Image (cartoon, rainbow, N blue to C red):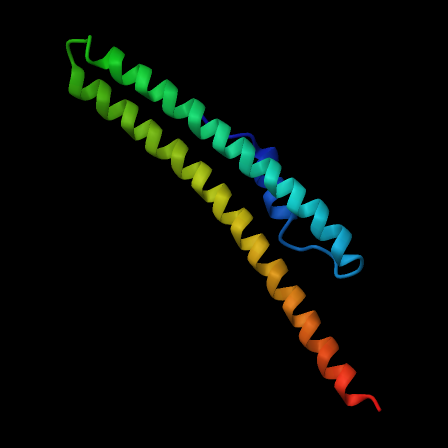
Length: 115
């Protein structure tokens, strides 16, 4: 089961905000990131609940180990996808902070050089 590509696309779009209207853009991106993080957490909780149900069902089967291995493999893959999305969001946030810091530094340097 793959996660919707829309969320991955939104995370990638957040990587390169335009420098103009930075504060408005930052607010929009932060809101979008918060929504993405909320979706990731809800999805993670749903998956974990589903996998616990599958695990219980596995113990009622004859081939318990095979069932558990399949279920855990799927769980690892899905959780890794969610983690990759979180990493994209974190990277975008880090890059925006660095860009803001560079702008502040540039403003300070240019502000000090003027009489």
